[in-house]
Image 1 (cartoon, rainbow, N blue to C red):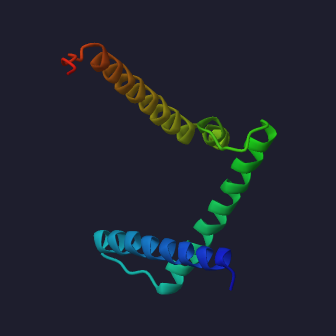
Image 2: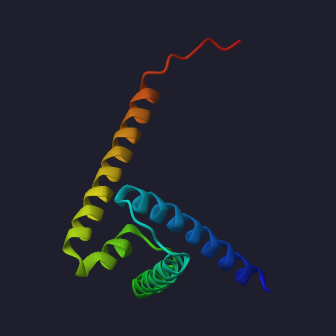
Length: 119
C-alpha cells in the first residue's frame, strides 16, 4: 500500500469515526437506533461528496490560473445552494472583518510603542 493509499484509509477511518459519533448522539437524542451498515453507507456518501467537492475546487482554481484554492472557489461551490451560499458568504465576511481588525490593532500597537534607551 502506497503512502497516499494509507493516508486515504486513515482519513476515511477518521470520517467513519466522526460520523459514528454524530449518529450516536442523534440516535440517543431521538431515542432510536442506527445500524453499523447505516454508518458505513453514510460514510461512503459523505466521502464521495468530499471527493467531488475537492475535484471541483481544483478545477475552479486551475481555470482561474491559480495553483491554490481560495475562498472565491469555495463560494463558487455553493452557487446552486442559495442558503448555503449565504451562510458561507457571511462566514467569509466575518473572518475578513476580524482579520482587518486584528491588523489594525497590531499596526496601532506598533505606533505607540515606547522606545528604550540604548546603551
